[in-house]
Length: 353
Image 1 (cartoon, helix red, strand yellow):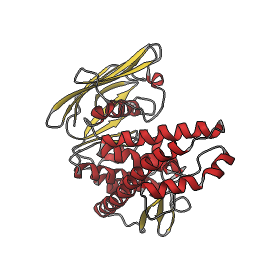
Image 2 (cartoon, rainbow, N blue to C red):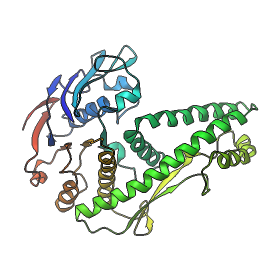
Image 3 (cartoon, one colour):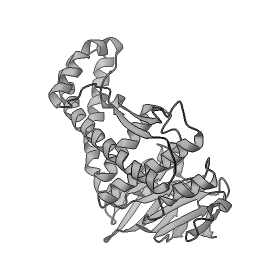
Image 4 (cartoon, rainbow, N blue to C red):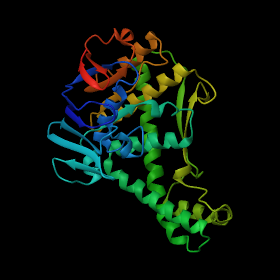
């Protein structure tokens, strides 16, 4: 649980000192008041990455040369986190010392639903791969190294193909080994998150058509052993050399969501897709709780595209969570969140509502 947050020169936020405490917190205010920036600061603190930009410099308040976000986390053991950027370089600290990224990621598990996730169900496969991989890493931060190993090997192979150089064999061997692990992790995760998703739908009480979540690997094989994958990669070598790029592997996998037997891309309203996305976030959190990594939920503009009935049913799934931060510019629709602590943001200033 996040027990304290402070920020300096972050986005449009005035420098803040905030002690959110457990339970649900509503961040209220008009568009541009700093609600999303506050959630972004928490996400950045937990993951060292922004959900709005890949460039840390974008997070620096106009006219400043650096930013800093610090926080205290109480998860039985108190920990201090810090993330910042200055003069072209980012930094992170755990308990006032430099620490490996994997150790940093273990401290504050987080599940976010933001504008960046709006196209999760209907957008390109990369969004769904990211959703799955983020869930896997949140459960077991050490798996980040497996994903990094695959990406590095894939990058080297791309260079060889573009430059039409020989010796793909050694990199195919590395890719086959890493791909086998990644595909097994993804298959297992999707199976488990599907079960948690069904539980979330049941808890919400919403009457939804049957929803199926299916893993669609780019390598069509029932066996994901290293030997089988290496053979598959070798069989694609001629075509890859012709095209000048890798044509098969986990970087091309997809996750298909079926809504009443049909792809969600072709059916379902914006409101239905929003409900499904939020329930998927709840499912991801359920897996983290099962792994004894109780997360903090960050729900940005959670009420948009939802009528009051759907909002109340969907939000009810999160009420038992240890800590939930929700932003909204429609205070009137949150009457059902009677026990939530209300905060108001106005031109970057944070105060009690």
